[in-house]
Image (cartoon, rainbow, N blue to C red):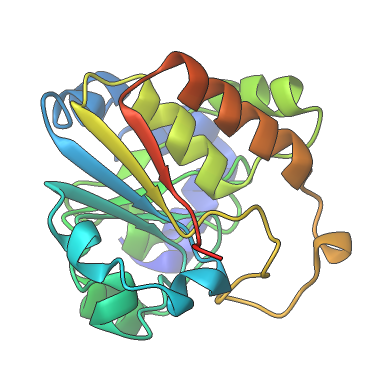
Length: 208
């Protein structure tokens, strides 16, 4: 299906049409059962660390958006799943070669046919986005939604890399915290509360 026809059907048929392309959440999270999972954020501070080998040692590695990989030493090289909240260039997807693409954004109008028709595609329910927005009282980032999604699985370990809640800005853009609609303080509190109650979750912070 070409992009134009896909766009027309997306507008006319809405969510039921888009869901025909998606793996269900239960199948998705079942793939994480008993696995060690790395969720790799795009904080610039990750480039100053040497956590690449720890990232690549995990069974399943989740990255997001353009998933910058400045060096294997800091970021590793493997990508199992790539989570999107915006369109990215096809050459990025080809170079990362993820087994799954996850569309995490509530807005569907930017979802492309080339994403939805890819094998292993997952469409995150809008109700889940709404729940996180209500929890944070702000639009959630793709990163925090991934953390929430994976924590609901039976993964054996969940390792967070490259999350400093915009302290060092993002490798994937130049905007400051004031220029994005997210509440990073709320996301930090959410993550810290999760770590406090879930021993599986480990936050690999920058060493000062």
